[in-house]
Image (cartoon, rainbow, N blue to C red; front, side, top):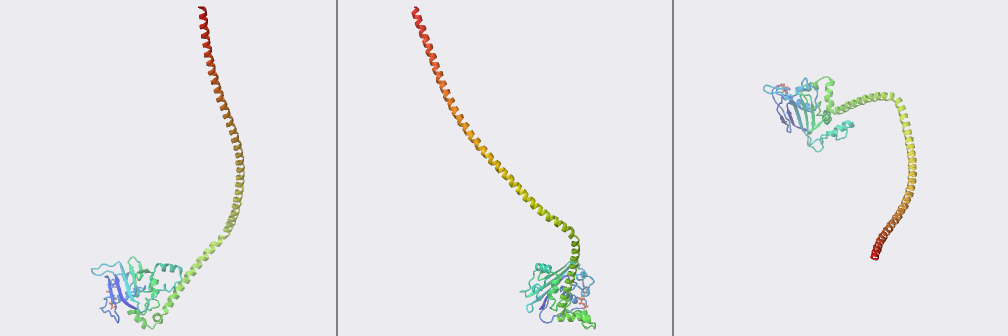
Length: 330
Ligand code: ATP
């Protein structure tokens, strides 16, 4: 793995976007005192996740943002990216190896899908805003700081890695104090990876312990409510039994009602049929009476015709007889 490029913008003494390409072989950056050489190594350590203000030679994190100079206004944020050539030695994300067992973390990780598999270079970016927000990216995908630590922790490149040795670090190496030297040798021996894992495991253990305490609290709280809840559960059970019984009784009642209604219906049908029969008989009777009435009317009509004929004949006869009487008198 080889550091190919360092890009800085708004970082310490680099307000403009500055790109430093590092070719094969040895690259030296030369400049007078205070020209910003150490700021470049600070940028590399910073992008790898350095959080120690002392190592970054500042008193607060904001000090890494360009703070203005004669004729230049301060920047609002700073950004550093390093591009690593991984053609010869691939970097492996702990996610890819399925190392992560924490479910919540796995979920987060799925959101931050970055694939290192086929990529021939890895771009690590860190941004910091004056508002205090930090952003971390691996291959332009936003990740957590932890992801960057984990990406490098067995490579010797980490923020505490021996690969970046600043002016103060040389003093540490040469120091007689075992503790100061130990961390450097541990990183070199690859032990820091296990130390990191141990710290993580201890952190998770602590979290689990806290969770256990919380669970115990909840358990205590819940057990004090068990008595009344048992009574309520008993009531609920009884309610269920009784409501089932009520349902059965209601069904029986309805079935009986339906039976009664059916019987009523049958009775009404019989009555209706006999009514119909009566009605038919009456209708026939009415028809007969109507035809009788018709023939009586006809007879009456014939009789009145005959009567008027007889009347007419009677008056004719009267006239004739009076004619004959007058002739006799003459
Ligand atoms: P030396 O050789 O003495 O170690 P150097 O070349 O390594 O010096 P650095 O220590 O990297 O120089 O840079 C120091 C310079 O960076 C100083 O001029 C300082 O003003 C400038 N500087 C540091 N932080 C900021 C900042 N936040 N904003 C603007 N300039 C800054």
